[in-house]
Amino acid sequence: MGRRIWTQEQKLAVVLDMLKGGDSISAICHRHGVAMNQAYRWRDAFLESGRKGLQDRRNPQHRDPVREENRKLKELVGSQALIIEAQKKLAGMLAEDGSGTW
Image (cartoon, rainbow, N blue to C red; front, side, top):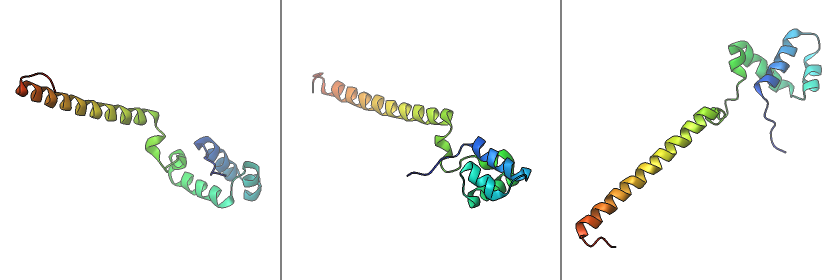
């Protein structure tokens, strides 16, 4: 079974329940299905940097669709530039040969 990926909102719900103090931390973690040590890490991150502390930092560039689209477009432009350069070289070689054939 793979790891569960928690959304920022789910993490925030756990942390806010912990900060309210109505139930024990154990009960809160059981209700949300999260390990206590993980909940404490989220709480500490939240207290340190607010909502931003709960963002998924494992691979952030793949979480932002705009950044991913930008990366794909840059790759496409790069490959197109290589194709154009190769076509220019081939056209130059054919022009030097004069025959116009391979």
